Image (tube, rainbow, N blue to C red):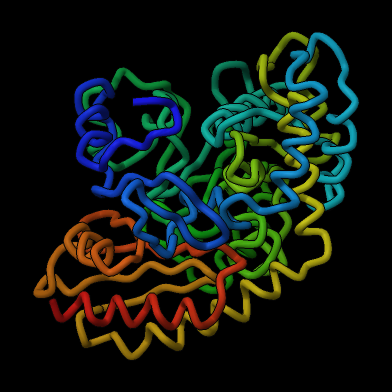
Amino acid sequence: MTDLELPTSDAAIAAEAEHLAHNYHPLPVVVAEGEGSWVTDVEGKRYLDLLSAYSALNFGHRHPALVAAATEQLGRLTLTSRAFHNDRLGAFAGALADLAGKDMVLPMNTGAEAVETGVKIARAWAYRVKGVPEGRAKILVASGNFHGRTTTIVGFSDDPQARDGFGPFAPGFEVVPYGDAAALAAAIDDDTAAVLIEPIQGEAGVVIPPDGYLRAVREMCTAANVLFIADEIQSGLGRVGTTFACEREDVVPDLYLLGKALGGGILPVSAVVGNRDVLGVIHPGEHGSTFGGNPLAAAVGLAVVGLLATGDLQRRALALGDHLRARLEPLIGAGVTAIRVAGLWAGVDIDPAKGTGREVAERLLTRGVLVKDTHGQTIRMAPPLIIRATEIDWAVEQLRLALTD
């Protein structure tokens, strides 16, 4: 087989089963091409992508502006490390800081790296600014959280599948119920460095906190001199109809943790974004990454910020999210027990009588729609922000039919 010849689906899946660690359980489709909201498998069948690589493809597959930025940069320079300056990083950092209304950016690669970086910054700030005694800084996190897969991060997860068998875990974290402002207030003490939460919990099934919760978190953190760290790796960059999910309650955290869509679906790009009084606690040599802030990532990230700067995609996500909600609501009681929608992001709970989330995802696959299940009975929908209303209509009709299969 030459490089230009595609394997059959069976051959590709068999090769993965033989040579890859089995840390994923993907749906049985082998994608070979993508454009916009659609992908094509090795046999030539097309599918509407309603997952967008967990929101990494907010702008669709191979967005022309992003591909052009990557292609141009590939012909010039891809990597220097941070041992030297490069001619793309400053422009990217400035544009992203402006988008977030902040002063500074610390670039990394993956979302988990951004979270780990946020944890280090919070602890350094607690010791160097707040005056917490060394070794006692505490970070409050929420039940149902998903912030990544490193051992530090899974150590404060309450998902047994993420935690079990991977300890011992780092201390310094306390879990409080998500959406419970009173429980959070009770947990804050003099040693609390930060509150780290997802404004909307994606992996948990697009769980939206009660109205006023984010405002309460902001007020509590301000009153107690505690950092509010918002993990917007999935919820940010236009997904929910605003640039950041925190904007749904007119709240500004001390630190944004960004990733996924920041790389435009082309390469991993993440960042911690904040003001100088917080990010300025990190000094040369204390934190870094060989690839973080590389010229290729900066060029693509700058193009991503350019797509979001006008606000057009955010407004589109908001309007199409209302459209998606209106199409999903009639399914409640007809195979669906509940829906949760924020912009173009939806968690759909499947009636167990109709099957598991995985089984419904597999039925949708045969109908040309890609979604992914989570936590047994839920499927997530996160279509590209460029999707058409007619494509949403078609996809929801396929869901209705799949629930009758």
